Image (cartoon, rainbow, N blue to C red):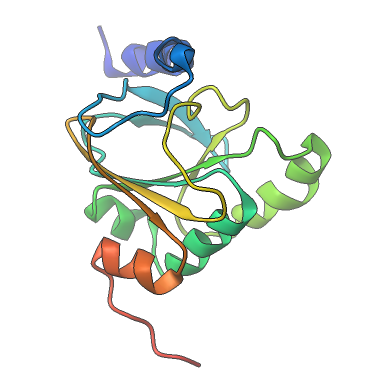
Length: 167
């Protein structure tokens, strides 16, 4: 099977697998395994969350998203990739018109991909805390650590990024 065919299968089946895992309604716990999942980014490009991902940067709400956005504002897709990091945003509760006219066009200005969970199924069982950025540390898609961070400085420190000088 070609890599392209496998990517499409994962893109189609991945959310269903995550929904099955989330059926109990409990967030993933340390030691649990995420299933590979495919999501599109803000440009409509397909990406796969697979064993290459070491850090999953996740936001489910605006406050957590703002912390992550500011923390990685100086990063690129390549620099996040070098960290094994991928940014995922659950935007399923965002009104569709707001997403299409404002949020996604603003995300297109970012120098790194933001994978979008538009219906909430792919991220339904990811642990999070309201108002905080989440960083999940993975090893072979097994959840090793979950960090819920309220500040830009804490996110940058968790990612091993140098503190930015104040303007």
